[in-house]
Amino acid sequence: MNITSTTSSPPNHTNTCEPPYDEENPLPLVVLYSAVLTLGLPANLITVFLTVLEVCQKNVLGIYLFSLSVCDLMYLGTLPLWAIYINRGHRWEWGSLSCKLMGYVFFNNMYISIFLMCCVSADRFVAVVYAVESRGLRRMRHAVIITVVIVVVVAVGHVPVFSMTEGESEKMKEKRCFEPSDPSVVVTGLNYARFFIGFFIPLCILIVTNLAIIAKVQASTGLKPQTKIKIRNLAFAVILFFLVCFTPYHVILLLRAINFHFSNGKCDFERSIYTPYTISLGLSTINSAINPVFYVLSSNSVHKRIHKGLRRLRSSSRSSSFA
Picture 1: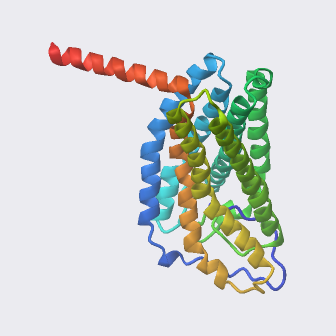
Picture 2 (picture 1 turned 90 degrees about the vertical axis):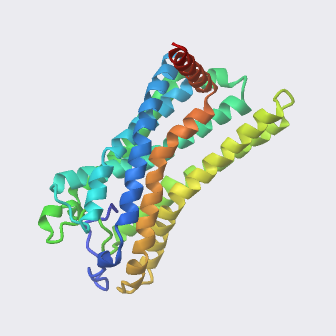
C-alpha cells in the first residue's frame, strides 16, 4: 500500500529491490485488520449518528468529527480486501482499477484524518484559551469550508495514484498492489513532503494546541480538580495516540528518502526495512478504530446523551425483569 512513482530511477539504481514477501508472516497483520474492522465499524457508525445530532445543535466540533468518522468508514470498507491480499501472499485478484481505488482511499484517509485531528485540537484550543473571542471565530460555516478544503486538497493531491504503474496489478506476473519498489527522485521528494507537510507540521500543531489547553486549564480557578485531570489526560492521550499511529510510518518514509542519497543502488536497506514498514502500516490502521473514542471523551454533550441512553436501557431492563 505504498504509493510510488512511475519515474525511472537514476542509472545507478536498478529495479531489483524485491521485498522479502516469503519471510513475512501474514497472520498478525490479517488479525490486526480484522480487529480494527470489528471494533471500528460499529464505533464509527454510532459516532456518525451522534455527530449528526451535534451538527443539528450547531456544534462546530461536530462538523470535524462527522467528517472524520465518514472518512474512517470509507477506509474500513477496504480492510477486507487488504487482509485477503496479504493472506494470499501479496497477490491482488480484483483488477488494476480496484487496486488503485483502494490505495487512493487508504492515503486519503490517512491525511484527511491527520488534518481533521489538527482541526479538532485547534477548535478546542480556541474554545478554551480564547473563550470570549471564540464566539465570533467558531462558526459552522467556517468549519464546513475548512473541512471541504482539506478533503479537496488531499483528494486532488492523490489523483496521480490512478496513473501509476505500481497499481497496474493485472500487468504484473506477481499481481502486486502498491508495494515498495526501487526508490526514485520523485518518490524521495514525495516522501520528504509527506513527512514534513503530512506529519511533522500537524504534530507540532497538536503539541502546541494541547499543551496550551493544559496550561490554560491548570491556571483556571473555576474548574474542579477532577475536571482539570480529565482535560489534561485527554490532551496527552491525543498526542500519544498520534505519535503511536503515525510516527513509525512517517519515520520510515523519511529514512527511505535519506537512504536514497547514499544507497548507490544497493537494496539491503529497502529489504531490511520492509518488516518494520508493514508493522507501521498496521499501526496507522488503528487510527480508524480509536478516533470515535476521542470524540466521546472530548464532548460533554455526548456524555450526557450516552448516560441518558444507558439510564433508559437500565430502566427498561429492570422493568422487563420485574415483569
